[in-house]
Length: 306
Ligand code: NCD
Image (cartoon, rainbow, N blue to C red; front, side, top):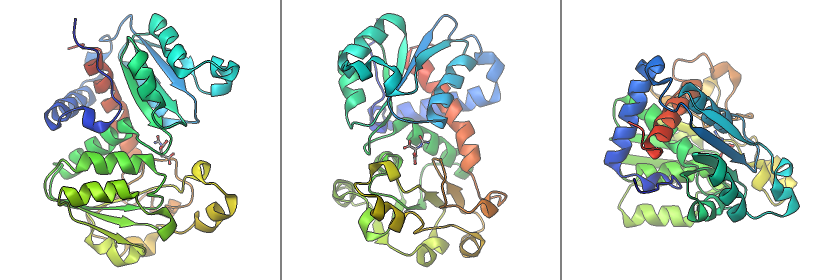
């Protein structure tokens, strides 16, 4: 039997394994019908203890497009968590029903606890302000498809770099590729956590921290915008003060390179003006499409289906 594998952190896969995964996602993109029976008879459980639209529906669509079926819950209150059941017990039960599980949880590390007790592959679909590896796979596949490689570019990450888990996962993942320069754009209160800048310093990876987007936008090949993470704030006043700190509009885009791509994990609130949506550099809806292909590839890989 193949060894049980989970996806907790983008670094769980080597760079070579990620290349294979992205190649597979590329094949799926070109031949969706060719993959429509690969998971016949298989079941995906989506256990979401926190709100989600994209990630859960993307996982569910991915499994359905592979011919499999889906069970799960989208709200902790409708699961036995409301009765006090632990994540460890829930996953033991889910392991009896499903072949693979995607779990989102507000507590950092909860999917990891689940993985340690599970007999089926568990995918971390976002744990608190910590990691969001499948969004990162989506981001990497999008960058690779738009730019042609995962090397030699400058990426600006803008907005809530403190609580934004997609940012933490993406920086982690990109730190393994050559020639990447990071520019972190945030208000002082929402700076990227120290453990991340410490990791970059140790690996000698260049980064800058700035407050004004206009000052650095001309240098960027990618601009990764993020939402201010309302649900992780301790007080509402701080959120209200910071929520509209950045608004990407036509004026700012006029300063950017002609080939700078805008990424966003979505949902968007106010940080990208809708007037930008028709700009050919706006790649955030394309990103959603790549997310489905990469989740299809991940499900196949973790289930050991060729
Ligand atoms: C992100 C998340 O849940 O962390 N959304 C997503 O999964 N695409 C980003 C966010 O909520 O801001």
